[in-house]
Amino acid sequence: MLRRLYISNFALIQEMDVSFPGGLTVITGETGAGKSIFLEALGLALGKRADMAALKNKTKKCIIEAEFDVGNLDLRSFFEEQEMEQENNVVLRREINADGKSRSFLNDSVINLQALKILSEKLIDIHSQHQTLLLNQANFQTELLDAFAGSSEIYRTYRAGFSKLQETRQRAEELKRQEQQAKKELDYFQFLFNELEEAGLSEGQLNKLEQESFSLENAGSIRTALTHAATLINEGDINILSQLSNVKLNLQSIAKYSTAYQALLERVNAVSAELKDLAMELSSASEGVESDDKKLEEVNGKLDRLNRLLKKHNAKNEQELIAAKNVVEGKLILFSSLENEIQKTEKEILKLQNSCLEIAKTLSSQRRAAIPALEKQVKEILSDLSMENAVFKIDLTAGPELTASGLDAVRFTFSANKGMPVSELYKVASGGELSRLMLTLKAMLAEKKQLPTIIFDEIDTGVSGDVADKIGNILFRMGKKLQVITITHLPQMASKGKHHLFVYKKDNDDQTVSYIRELNRDERITEIAKMLSTSTPTASALKNAKELLSA
Image (cartoon, rainbow, N blue to C red; front, side, top):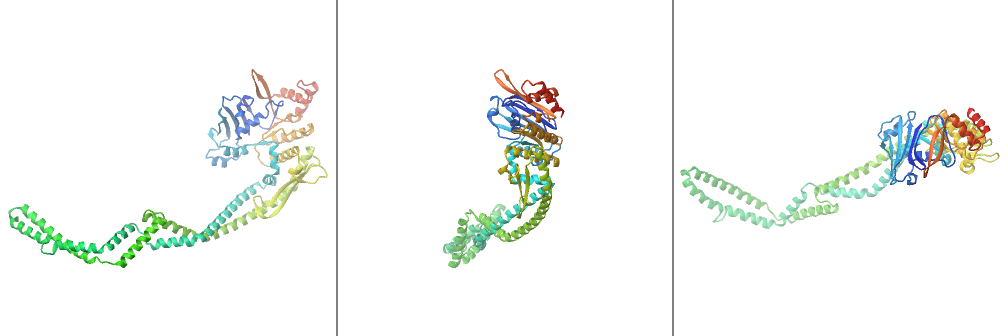
């Protein structure tokens, strides 16, 4: 329920703070006084596009606050999505700076316009000529029918199941697309994997192969160098070991004179032993070096293949090449699992289809059963609104496949005049007729479910006093179930309100300013009398106004 609307620096309003009690509240005032300004301001608080032209003073900030009591509304899911705690009191604030930038707040926390729009639809329903266009939309007609049939909860369950079915179908299509692509690429990726697998990749492999290739290419030089080194140590007339023997003899002759000389001798003996061992290893290494053209060709082949793979996969080293191999292997594993995944998904689709089908059949049954009573009730209310010849029909056509609305296609048809065939609403109903039909349906909805605050913007436009009186009675009855606010020009409507707000404007110095205030009973009598006669109401107009209020 809308409790309060605060407006500062907007259009003709300098500052306005209005409270809205429950029940039916009527708003009246002369044309141009600013009755619709509060609707425009409320629209901004609810997330509509801001306009710099709305600022009364271009150098000051515009602030609009709308306070709602939401204790009777289920907004848990919304607040959970926004990661906020739900409170029974909600304040929406819109600030428009002098530079045209605007921000929106929910209980002092910044909120984006998309989220604000979702919340606004749950808080308030502004009925205007534009909104009657909803009557022509199939999904709106379906939701209305389900509300009257008491099948809204079943419909929500169906929509959730159908949404999951659609998602699963899309996933199956994507898997099949991947499978088709996989069939084209499978041979290629299998070739890549086999090529990398046969390379026997390991860390340091490139360096090892390069060294082995170099050794094989220079086997002769290597063997000569090793043999010559061994000869210098242990062979020939003059070699290192024979020279070292002379060193040993000289040190042996003096070792007895000092432990230092003895230590030097021991070191020479150690060097001699190490050189003998080194000479043997050099000889052995020399004997192990052979020229092997076949082996060289094999090593160079491996080296060429490894370098080619590095270039092919844009890899810097063996580690990156191994990683590329793992990626290819992962794709092969994915390809092999696609068929199983497709089969699993198709089983899930069948299960969801059967579940949705059962719910859709229940929906169809409840909808069809509710149609006769609904059509009759609409006709009765339209008759009270001076549309005695109006015919309202609901066509429920069963289709062969599941859709977002179930198995049914819902279509509202209408005829306002006797002898005229019923047809789609947009073809045969005028704006005023659509407006009265929408009012009828909303009045009936108020009996079925908890609706948000409803605001009617001059719903009585173009109707007679008698019809206005009947519309007023409907709004009065609705006001017993929910908060209803209506802007009106007709005294018959104005007299029905539990509360009466009066909008007026005054010239202050060099500017015109709009004001709004609640009228007491005597002021209401005078205002309604003015609406019945002139700005200076006659005695009969005052008497008539009292009678209207008493009624």
